[in-house]
Length: 260
Image (cartoon, rainbow, N blue to C red; front, side, top):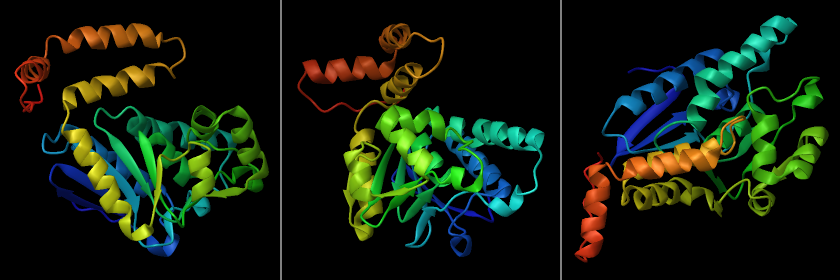
């Protein structure tokens, strides 16, 4: 499919989605959010895609925020709809995506950009990355899940400080805060993310998908994550991947998972 704001490349079952608005520092507008939703929707249905890497074009920014010019004159009702639709179409969609999503954060990840990175299952940062949620400096709050996901990742106190001060942290601080898993040189960022994707793909992708559901359940209101884990564990016993994995282990050979 042809897009105006994003690029796609698939290689060795790894789909790299690149937000490509370099003149706008890859800022998220409605059209880009819709295109990202469509790209993820297609990736969900494409058996060739096993892992998704999400990044931004150029060296300056992953996503420098939302496109403020689009909503500067919105009413409260329009603002609420903007947040609700964005969360449904993209941010929650990515967070609950059944295939692993790795954010490769290069440069600025601010506002909606950091919220998008946090929606991914984990994050790798280049050494020039800068992250923050500056929304209160505009008289608004994070609306794409930032007030929920940042405390889950870095803790309540650090999240309160980051959001209240509207300040940025660098890649090493993000690593210290557990906001990112790894920091690498910018030239190595995508290759590092792809190598992690390859490690994931050596395992049962059916089991990986079940693990994503179980882990996410712990962060859903009114859901007992332990119950979800027990159910997903039980379902695993009915998969061909389980039969292959246990057979390979018992026969001391490498597993060749069918993905079913």
